[in-house]
Amino acid sequence: MVKDLATQFPAVLILGARQCGKTTLAKAFLKGEYFDLEKPSDLQVFLGDPEFALRRFGGPVIIDEAQTLPEIFPILRAVIDERRGGKGRFFLLGSVNPALIKQISESLAGRVGVLELSPFLLAEAKGLGVDLATHWLRGGFPDACSEKSEAKWQRWEENYVRMFTERDLLRHGVKLSHIQTRRLLTMLAHQHGHLMNASELGRSLGITYHTVDAYLDLLEGHYLCRRLIPYYANVGKRLVKSPKVYIRDSGVLHYLLGISKERQLLESPYRGNSWEGYMVEQIIAMEQLAHAGSQFFFYRTHAGSEIDLLIDRGRKRTGFEFKCALSVERKDWTNLKSAVSDGIIERGYVVYLGERSYTAADDIEVVSAEKIIEGVGKGLVGNP
Image (cartoon, rainbow, N blue to C red; front, side, top):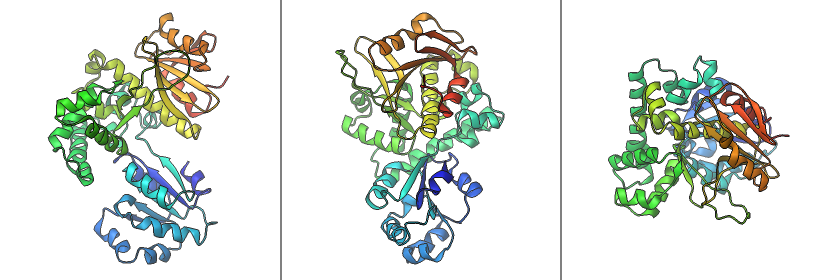
């Protein structure tokens, strides 16, 4: 995908959470001069005269943590416009979505291709000998996912959360203490997979719901959480309008919930919601690679009918119901069948932990988790 974007755009922006593998990807697969702007000696190259620095290198230039130096973007635009035909000249890496996207929309619109890099997906983890159960438990961050020791995994997660709450958020003028921010993260973990109630979170922390929303914007921008918005359709039914909230990496989620062993996860009351969030992230990441422009929602009526994930490709909509079980029953696809009848979706899938895949009803299939992830990645899911 990075190489495809580099043949189409003069610049490529690679976004993703800290420690998800952006730098490793750049050093292993991209050729060019590499600069990490969080490294003082590399930052110094651009501080005095950014224009001179950008012009002096003939080959591709790779700039890590590009949001550290926002004044480089207007200059980059001018350098690109002098030779618009030159593709793949600049690679920008960043971990703070709101700051980078704002700067790019103002300076580099139409000149840059954007790729969101997720932590290891299941297919990548399996290549390292990590099975689905372990990947679900420990999450996809490369260093955490590969830890053999439970204690070392916990230590890695603790340091990751501390670094985020004690360093990254403070750069954005966050007024909550790191202890309050940690409480907010833990409260979000307990709301994982539920409708978000910003007012309730605000009362618990002694802040307004407007402040909660602003903090959630930051958490989303750092790829730590996701707010999945509801799908609205004119079907004569009252629909839920609040978003659902998820901690994006299942390893971070389980650490915040105090879950470190597979048995704890299987016995936890959060098991079902954890599985739902895990599958939401896997499928969204694979869909984004297979189909540019897809949008993602959930669907719920006030009467209780719900679809966990709805993918909208413009002319086609596909629904997913996630079941954390080795078997499913007829009632598990009732909501999907109703949504097909109402014209909300064209096809529906019940995704579960079992191995068999079969047709449950017209336009409804029961599919194993590993098979659905593979199918989404190949662009096969949702097609007739």
